[in-house]
Amino acid sequence: MAGGQRVPMTAAAIAWQKASYSHEGANCLNIAAVGDGTLRLRGSDDPDTVLVVAPASLRALLAAVRAHRHRHQLR
Image 1 (cartoon, rainbow, N blue to C red):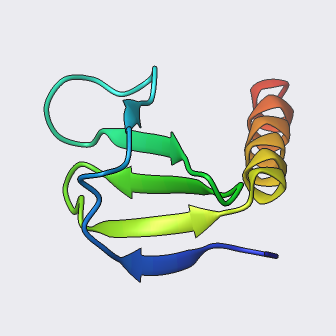
Image 2 (cartoon, helix red, strand yellow):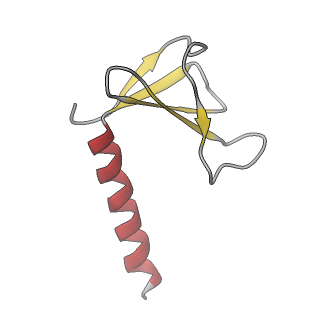
């Protein structure tokens, strides 16, 4: 899977974890690993809309964000 895909679904059966940078209340990011090897991401403001992503794609996105942040902190 090259990128993510928005999948409307009922997510009650998935074991969600709140991201460590999320605070209490709104604007939280939840993540879950599922049996097919993909990850599920959802926001607290729309928990029934779930992004399905391959772990490698998420790693690449996070690496790009970190590299961008690092370049701009050095200025």
